[in-house]
Length: 417
Image: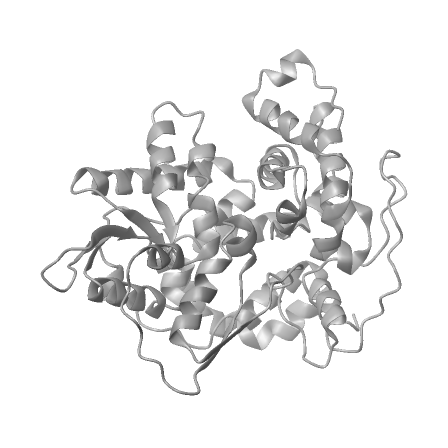
């Protein structure tokens, strides 16, 4: 793709990096086939190729984001299927992250949107606040119907409905400390990310991980000062907050490295893993952290990556055990991990069923099961607030905004809005 940035614009390292990414795009359109929002809406501006044009136009002209650009960038799920599909190696993840940061700096969202985003950034990255918010969610459930009737409050209604009615108690294993490996022979030393939302919603994931690793003779460290990986605020364009979280974790894991070395930093949530493996890029311009962040990113491993690389005893198989494996987008597209989870499960189960997903819809709330697979994506999109309208007539002339194809979803409670 030809670009026309000035020398002054390219002096900004963020713009220079985005310019390199833009120049790799060859307009082939392969990405449109695996983009969930394009497949659902049929609008070129809701495809990676369309968003790339919008981002290029915005950055080249040095102009603030407008409502149209924000609408189409906000619809991106960051499933990164386009990066797996792209034959030219376009790093769409870094490009859309830059666009989100630019939007955050230059666009003033409606009041309720700003309040919702501020609330999420204030609550979700902090386990204590998130736990308290989930307990208070019960007070708001009686008003779900009212919130659903007001378009601006539909995200609040969706969050209230998704909030669990009960949450498990906080795990003592999430507290800073060291869990010694069993046996006389120490097989390794790792740190584990306790994180934020997962430690509240399902602390058993990390408890089981620590139990397994220590049983294999691996020492597990929960470092003091570790926190949220920063992915949530990073995807909201709150770059300074995201970088602060990254620096906090880099400091915590660097101390653990200095105090006894680490063979790996274990991550049990694939979305967090994608972000932590990108710390080296995120902090590349910070001379105090660039080297340390790159070292942390190199040590970051999904639990399945680590287990697949060490000798493990043969598991005891229970006859008739059947496992269905769902490969998260952040796992298969963000981290490019596809083989290890299935191989580990195949060793432990009588049967492991999995299906490679070309198109992601997992990031959208699930509609009723009466819908067909295609209409499930459509009504899930409707529930998230995405319109099925064609692109506005003011779309840039360089982009051909295709009219949505006729995809009338089957009737369900979300499709009928």
